[in-house]
Length: 390
Ligand SMILES: [Zn+2]
Ligand SMILES: [Zn+2]
Image 1 (cartoon, rainbow, N blue to C red):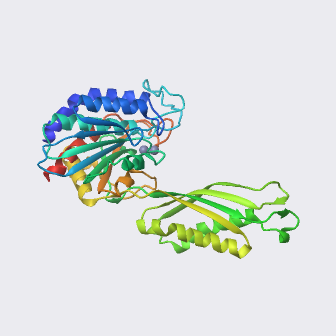
Image 2 (image 1 turned 120 degrees about the vertical axis):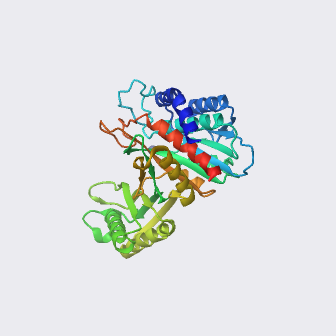
Image 3 (image 1 turned 90 degrees about the vertical axis):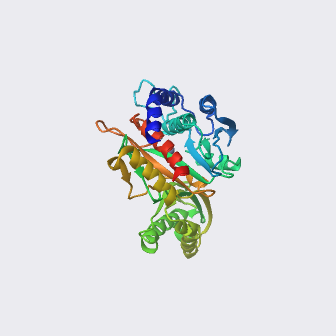
């Protein structure tokens, strides 16, 4: 079966490159993937899949029905949105949209999803059904929840996905057991002091100084009270307050992001942060308001499904092209929301060039080794096949 999958993939290669380049030159921002979705729906229909459009706002779902000898339903997820970045790659198929670029490789993910649908639809009947989930708005961490709200995870037993990775060479696959990405939440703290004359601090409550104490206490408390083997990253990225150089500020607003890998750590963070904020404020007579908004949880790869993908990649490419990743990333990925409904795994698709500089994700010169598309498509299609035949 593997050699049949590889043969079909090789035959499809020029078409897949064409699809990827079309998507790359026509990027759309999160939640506005109308043309991308219509294009995806067209390709899926031409492969004989039953297609639903406008699922999860601008998402597309494709159903590839098996012969139902196995009642399990497999989901394969790809994200379709681009970023508000002005492309500087100089590629002949660079973005036609000023200020919008596929700088996170979602054009590759969509192509891998479509290529997998093309291959599996040509293989003949599968024992179970596959539901392809082409989601919008991953970059804003909204798309997965829109899709789930529209019921795409109903009856799904397992879900697979991939994300490109420039530090892994094209042609290689990265496998990670356990945590792959971090939980990422938003934090907003407003310190409420009392205004006064800059010369008379004893008559005021200085919100700027108390805010600085809050930030310092939070950063020090992480290193002294959190388990160093269970990382927490707290970044205050924005701070606003004060009116004039000689007026003591009555109000300072802090905005930040909070990231962690372990679900138990993630669960206790709002209370832990509020305890520190409240103690500091109380000591110096200030009041505060705190707003902790849950973002996406950490992607926790299921061991059984991860092993299926690892075996598929090993058989397809050999062990020197399969990297076992020792470290997770503190980036966030809304694929984790699907994992609240079914086990799943996301593998890393190497897209790095060996002979020229590579740029990080979200960089205006981010580019991918297109040979990775075949690597991704074969790995995904064969892993899906193995899901029913292990
Ligand atoms: Zn991204
Ligand atoms: Zn991404």
